[in-house]
Image 1: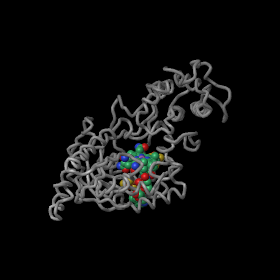
Image 2: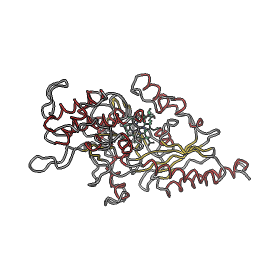
Image 3: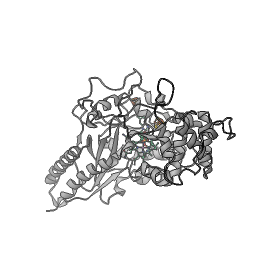
Image 4: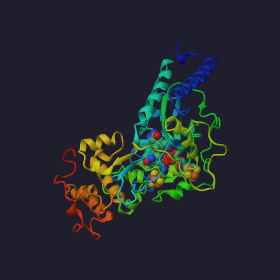
Length: 428
Ligand code: B12
Ligand code: SF4
Ligand code: SF4
């Protein structure tokens, strides 16, 4: 007998059993939180998308903004879809914030300037998330139903799906906070035509089901206060035109107004998560999982947002994959640059976007007395791409290698010597 031929009572039992089985399969596959929700139009998220688009807050982003009606209607992903299974994959504990380059006691840089990659993008955690969701889909299809895995797809607003499935609650930073893990989680769904009972499985210390969409933060405003560009224009509202995470992905010129604020970031921005008190808990929990020594025990008593002010989770290792040697990157071929970028979203898959980001980060972290910085900036001042030339001139001025407000006579670049070839022409 096929699942849809079952009697009503049997069908309800089956919906319960299958829901339990998918949640359990997701946990076994490594998801820290899994939940189910009935398929329905995400009316609230649709309104937010349309309103932000109307007010220009999307800053030209496409993604879910391209077609809000589609991105907020899961039934468009699979004919006859009845349920969503949503999972959260926790990635390792963050290293806090931006840092100046390390120095020895004589003030000489101990290491070449490094660019920082947001933790979610330092390794391909989406692959792990995808495998876990595949395991869920396998359970569904083995029971005779159809399933479609959706990971970071423009066809579904993931956070809203996760909130509906009880996986977490929205923070004022707009990120989804998963009880017991904070926001250091990637989200994905399985859309299925199977009827599933509402089910949720998170951590032992988390509430059985989280329905509130407003309750997580209390009076805390740490993320709004800490955002280096003021991109969180109101609780739960992000202006992408100011958000460093978006500006690093977008093509063209990096806005002058935000270049200083970029600091050493090369891809992504973790500041609104670094300061979140709910991520103190996440630091303790995911550190153990990453093998970095911290216990993987339950959340500390009373952990949660308070009025004590921000607290950043600490961690990181010497060979941190979240740090990239900027000079090395800038002297790499286009193929090497894009290999480093992996699955980063890079506008037009154009390596010049990554080079542009690296030039701004080098301007913020490099030093005039570092021959490698002088060499690479000197070379980019002669780059055939005018956008890269302009960013190189900005960086050279910022580190003190060029004088004046406009590209002019080099102060120290000649002494350091150029490489003779335009960056990106071939391997360094
Ligand atoms: C576009 C996009 C971006 C854009 C815009 C983000 C944004 N906030 O709109 C940019 C490039 C800036 C971005 C940045 C990041 N992103 Co992004 N991004 C997406 C994408 C593709 C679509 C998001 C979307 O549709 N937003 C639409 C708007 C309307 O939704 P929203 O911003 O979440 O708004 C909700 C809340 O604000 C809430 N709300 C409204 N009013 C209020 C008021 C209060 C008081 C509260 C509490 C809530 C609230 O309701 C809104 C609607 O549901 C998704 C993947 C996907 N397909 O969904 C990933 C996704 C959202 N991004 C993700 C990640 C990891 C990030 C970064 C952390 C990466 C980084 N380190 O650089 C940053 C975080 C920046 C931030 N504060 O959001 C994860 C989020 C994981 C999580 N735990 O939340 C997702 C889900 C990808 C994934 N599959 O895991 N991202
Ligand atoms: S990702 Fe960075 S720039 Fe964007 S809202 Fe968060 S702190 Fe601000
Ligand atoms: S920093 Fe504070 S306001 Fe922002 S998401 Fe975390 S708890 Fe909420």
